[in-house]
Image 1 (cartoon, one colour):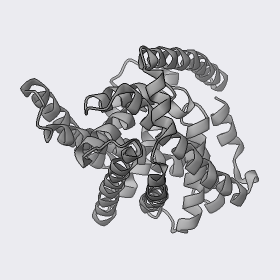
Image 2: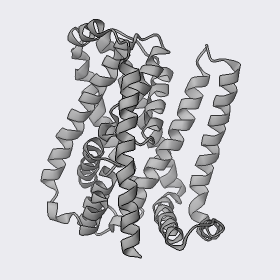
Image 3: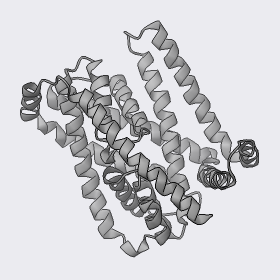
Amino acid sequence: MFNKDRRSKNNRSHWIIPLSLTLAAILLYFTLRDLDWPTFWTVIKFGHYEFLLLTIPIGCINYFIRTVRWNVLLRAEKKISIVTVFWANMVGYMGNAYLPARAGEILRSAFLGRQKGLGTSFVLATALAERLLDVVALVLIGSISFLVQANVSPVLANALRFMALIGFVGLIIVIAAPFQEKLILRAKGWLPLPEKYSVLVSQQIIRFLTGMRSLQSIRRLGIFTILTAVIWFIDAFANTIGVRILSQTLTIDQALILLAALGLSSAIPSTPGYIGVYQFVAVVVLTSFGFSRANALAYILISQVINYLLVSFWGLIGLWRINKSDLSPDATELIKE
C-alpha cells in the first residue's frame, strides 16, 4: 500500500509540473502581448530606486513579524526562541521562492521540528494552519477593500459582499474545526473514497486540526489575529511607497486589493516564484487603478527581484545557522515527491 501511495504522489507531481509550465507560458504571453517595450525599459532605467531604502527595511520587519506570528502557534506546544524560528522561517520562504509545490513549508517545518523536538508533523500542521488563515484574511481584506472603492458596480459590490461573507464564515469554521474532530472524521466517512485515499485524507485532517488546536486559546487567537492584520497593512504600506519608484501612487485599500489578488493567486499551480501568475495578476489589478501595462509589469518585477534578494539573503544565513543534518529523511522524501 505504501508503494501504491508513493506511485500516486509521483504521478501527481508528473502532471503538476507540465501544467504549471503551460499555465505560466500562457499567462506570460497575455501579459507581454502588445507591451510597449521602449516605455517599459525607460521606466526600469529611470526609476527612483532611493525608495528601496524605505521598502527593504519594512520588508525585513514584516518577515520578523511573520516569525512572531508563527511562534504564537508553536508556543502552544513548546517555548522556542524567536531567533531560531526566524531562521527556519526564512529558509522556508527561500524554499518557496526556488522550489516547486511550496516545498519551503516542509523545509522550515523539518528544520524546526528536528532541532527543537516538536516533531515535523506538528510544526507542519501549524505552518499549514497559518497559510489557511492567511487565505481567509486575504478574502476578507480584499473584499472589504474593493467595497470602499468609489467606482465599484452594484453587481460587483454584491459579489464582493458575498465573498466577504464566505471569508467570515470560513474564519468561523477554521476556529471551530479543532473542537469537532470526531464529527469531521465521521463526515469524511460519508465520501465515496477508496480506502487508501480515505486513510490519506484522515491523516491530513488530523494533522491540520493538530495545528489549529494551538489557536484554541482566546488570548493566542487574539494575538494571532492582530499580528495578521499588522502584517498585511504593513505590506500594503510598503507597496504604497514602492510604487513611487515609478512615480505612481496607490492608496492603502488599492494596495490591499493587489496583495489579496496576488496572495489568492498563489493557490494556482505555478512555477517557483510564481513566474507568469504574479505578472499577469499584477498587470490586471494595477491597470484597473490607472497604471500603464509597462508601469504595472515593471513594478511587479522590481518587487519580485527585491523579495528574492531578501529571502535569499536571510535564507542563506539561516541555512548556515542550521545544521543540515537536522533535516529528517522523511522530510527529504516529501520534498522529492
